Each structure stands twice: as C-alpha cells, then as structure tokens.
Image (cartoon, rainbow, N blue to C red):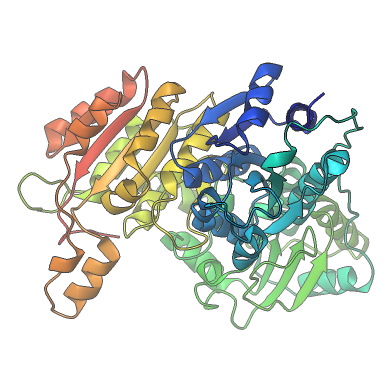
Length: 539
C-alpha cells in the first residue's frame, strides 16, 4: 500500500463524509484514493480559501470536524483569512496541506509553512515520515476535536508514493466531563436563592439536546425566562417563555426582561460585548457563567462566578440543590408568554416600505417578505456587511446549527464558501446565503459552479446597493462624497445565470413577488438580486 492510499483510508476511518478541496501535485493522489474508496464525497472548489471555508461551514452545520485539502506554498497563503476565521470561531477543522520536498530550496512554492500557520493561531502537525503518518493524522483530528481548533496537517509531496505497512487508526475518543460540583456550585445556588428576576442565557456551547432539555427544566423550576446568544438562536424554539436573542438583536420585550433581571445564569456563552451590549445588560447583576470546557476564547465580560462542567449535568445539579434547600420559584415569568405572543404577531406583519430611488426596494420589508416565502426550516449563512443585522433579525432560524456564522474575523467574502459547505452537508432544508455585492464579488463568482455541480439547494439573497456599505456610511457620516466606496454595478442576475443559477432581479413589488415564486418553484440554486438604494439602508 502507498502512503497516499493509507491516508485516504484514515480519513474514512475518522468519519470524513465530505472532503472539500482543490488538488495540486502534493495532494491529488490522496484525493483520488479517497474518491476511489466510494465512501465519501469530494467537493471540488475553484479557490483554496473557499475549500477551507466550506469545511468551516460543514463543521458549524453538522457539529462535526470539517476536513479540507490543499496543495503547498501559494495554496496555503491563499487560505490564511479562512484559517483565521476558523481560529477565531473555535471551529474544529483538519486541513491536509501538501509541502515541498525537504531540502528543495529552489522550489518556486517553498515557504516556511509552519510559520504561516502559526501567524493565524492554527495548530500545525507535521507528517514526520511514512511510518508515523497515520499516528500524526490521528493527533491532528484529536487536537481539532478536543481543542476546537483548526489544524493544518503538513504532508511532504515526496513521501506520497512511499510504501507503508497498514497502521492501526485511532478514532477520536469522546471527551466526557462531569458536572460542576463543590463550593462553587453551592455558591451559584446561593445566588439564585436571593434572585427575584433570574434569567437563563444559553450560548453555542449549550446547544445539545441534553443541555436544551436540562435548561428548560431548570427554567421551569426557577420560573425564569430563557434567552440565547445569536449563535444559539432557535435553541428554545416553541418554549412559551423564550425571549429570543440577548444582545443588540433583542426585541423590545426581551430588552425589558434582560434589563430588569438581577441574576443571569449563562450556559456555554462567551459573554461577548455583542451579547452583553457592551456590558449594559450585565452591569450591576450577579452573573454565573457555566462553560463546558476550559479552552479560552475571548470571554470579555467577567462573571461573578465561573464554573466548568457538563452543561446538562450542571443544570440538573442546580435543580437538585434548589429542591434540597426548598428555594421557591421566582414568579418572574408571569404574563410573559402573552407579551411574547403579541410581539410574534407583530413580526408576522410586513412593515411598510420606505420611498427609495427608482429601480430599488426597501431592504427590511423585502427581507421580511422573503422570510415568509422561504421554508421555515432552513440554514442561514450571512456574510459580513451593513446588511447583516437586518438579515439575522428578519430571517431567523429555528435551531442553532442552522445559523452559520461567518464574522469571527471581520472579513467580508467568507459567506459563499461556508454556504457551499452547509448546503452540501445539510440536504433536508435549503441553505440561504445573504451577502452584499462587495463580499459576494470578493468571494469569487466562479465558486458558484461548485453549488451548481453539487446540485446544492441554495438560495442567494444579494443585498446589492452598489457600494461597500461600511465605508459608504463613514464617508456620508462626515458629509464627504462616498465615491470611493461605490462599486460599478454588476448585472449579477445575468452573470450568475450563465453559471447555472436561476436568477431574479428585484427592483419593485412585482419582481419581489417573482422572487418568492422562484423560491417556491426552485429545482436548483437560485439567486435573488435585491437592488437597494445605498442612501436608504435601514440596519
């Protein structure tokens, strides 16, 4: 057996059902061997960055480790932004990356790949020699899963055809942790005993079925409302006292409940400035943060108390302590369900459209209309831009894994790649990509052919205002000409149609109706080009 064949078998043994990549001389034989196993799906991309982003989207949508492969040198430098995005998001990822032969100093693509990877904070695992290759790959998968971190697995091109003896492949062991216990847990229960308006907040680290059930039981015992971070949106879908997102996207009732709370139990939430509204939501309150592991990500708000332990187990342990101490419920949820139902009814109404320039539509009413036309069960991938909060607010998802977040590194253009990863992994619901014209162009329109080739159920909503929005705002806020922020109008509908998308250009109410019909009648990928007035963007 040759090394490239054994590596392909190891990928299968590690449960790699989707391999995203772009082949070159250092990885093409390994990819070919993976395809020949007939057990997985290779998704070819046109740019290395989108291959890594697709694996990132896969990981977010499935909860499993994403796997991508690229060749060496410029292929690695092409994925630096994508790697940084995965690092900042704590996304488990293994990138099998080729490398030049040792000592070949004159090779055009020879660089110090370890230093490139270190610059963005990803882990680097060297394939030392053919005899240790599988052991090294096993280690890469363990690091990715247990440390929630992207790992670059470095494979020298000159080793790929070396003969190897079959080696035992070690699947990643489950990382089991116990619930929090001891004095810290008792202190947390003591804080709850004196709370009059407690609130339970869940983040992406609490998004398992077991954690969901335990937190709902805890909320019922405490008589406390339930809230989530943006990235955990939909976790408590259907619960009568679910106030939705805590942070800048909170609706009025949620904001009132959060501000009136006196104790917040934050499960699996990093407590970022976006969740705490620059600490406005936590100032003067007792905050107990329960995290499922000790891995450090930017946890910017300092809680009153921090516990490390299994989310579900810790929630159940708090209930037991409350029962033992006969701590009564707070009564904080009285009449809340009625208020939330009234707010939901208001959301079902499409707001009146503002007057915009001829040939354009008002973004928020258009998004709300598309929300009603889309299936309720869908994956949402929102690229970064001044439209993004409107997309999150007006196109909500009903479960956390259906929100693919692309803004960890603050880079526009990550959405298309991650949408391809989600759309090829999740096949029982469409993937909806919302992007701006600047980010969509930056991401590489050629990558749309991957969505067409893979017959992805993808709907692209393009917020096309002919500008780089954030820069347009900066200029206009200072009464300066926004000329440098403007983008020459691209006819995305015509361009994307040539690549195999069904397209609709939305310029008025009638064409918006046509877009809704295109969603209902779709048989493949669809692009909806929302023509917007750059002077009238309501965020």
